Image (cartoon, rainbow, N blue to C red; front, side, top):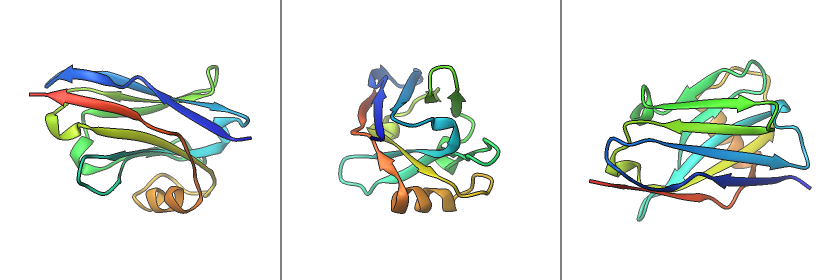
Length: 130
């Protein structure tokens, strides 16, 4: 059974850093496209970053470019989201999602694909204080 578990959330001051983890069990993450999403209070869920199963290329939404880094680790069967220079507007519940395919480099469309076909974790809370 495919399971994803997020961890690493917490409370941090503006300008601080956190590293989120998305650990997989029941499947090998390296063969899957992975996305990080977030839902802020009163807002719809949005894609933050994703990484392709095809070539492990990353994609970032504009608001996090230059601050967040997504990466895979085969040894731990996990995907990480390094979040630097955090801002209060980054406060949200962060979720990871995984899906087989598609055979393309990461782009904005991958968020939609993951939303439609992905398995999801339960999320981890990130709170950034000003």
